[in-house]
Length: 291
Ligand SMILES: O=C(O)CCC(=O)C(=O)O
Image 1: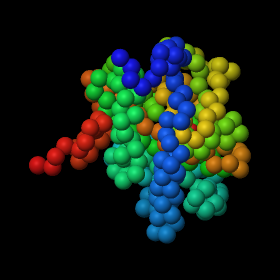
Image 2 (image 1 turned 60 degrees about the vertical axis):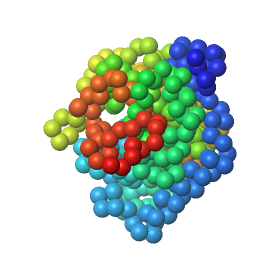
Image 3 (image 1 turned 90 degrees about the horizontal axis):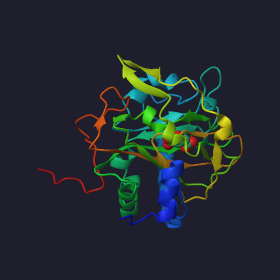
């Protein structure tokens, strides 16, 4: 029996492939998560970013794809920059607070604030309602989408990047600012989850490749904007096409996103994101006792 979603929300999820849950995160918790992001960024300002961090994350150019910085970020918390943060000579032209594209990809396992947030009871109940048998928290990102230079995230579905057999990935996306059409809110193609993925992004050798499964391009006219207030959670089915526009406004659009897979499915060994044995995937339960 669903414990968290009502019948209407479950019906919407099944029919359209997403569920919008307003007020999922209490304002005080949104404040604590934003303060934690500020703290992490302040540390980068004071101490500089770790060596190798001048990696631009661009879903339009996929330049990040071949980067070790990206491919080896499954079990750490690493910053990635916006393209527009640098001039043509590679000099950073905006302050750190406005220069980052995202942090990824193990914040949910390593961060003292995002960790407990990612494993709270509401999250576990939501996963349960969405049919997870053995939920595993696979990947997390703080997505900055900074004012003026926050870049587009191309239309994609998450299964293309985090492939399980059978398909199980679900994304929980949390607005930490009000997200509007102007500052680059999420958009989705309602019902598009029934059509299956168009591509598969996977590791090959030391790099990556994208296999074309279905040549039909997404019809961008089918996308609908999901304008939401800070504190909202949007759950995305792994096959649901979603997109976000560049942030050309002067308003921030901070978000946190968490991707879950089911441990009953096979997570393919050529997916780009591979955990080392030092940090095995976990569900919502507490850390196993140290032996
Ligand atoms: O926050 C965004 O703009 C994109 C997030 C996204 O596509 C995802 O989490 O899968």
